[in-house]
Image 1 (cartoon, rainbow, N blue to C red):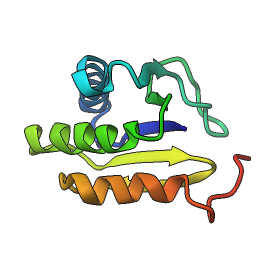
Image 2: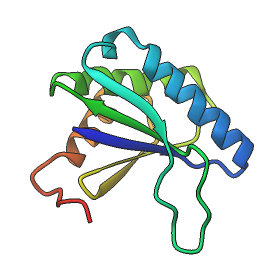
Image 3: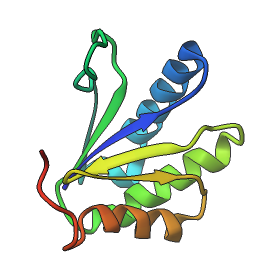
Image 4: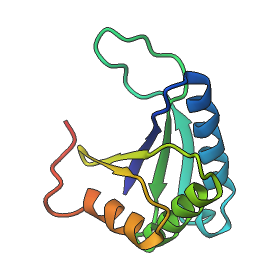
Length: 122
């Protein structure tokens, strides 16, 4: 299962700092170490936009059981960053926005991305 996580801040500098913070948090998280691949990448540019900077944290779960650990890591990151902006997670052509630091709520949102109603990526 692969997730693309974006952060949308009003200030581009704050957005990049938050994205790098989230990436480092997930990359160093002990519970994700053996079951998850975390990387920074450039999202496909929108029409008329220029690309070139990291703007997405890619998370690839190698085991389905890692989903709960990812949810806990995301919720903990949001809890330790009280001013953190919402996280936009995308998988299988479906997107959700995480506004909470409740691990169970985050897990349910992430599961919804991989549910049977989620269609293939365009």
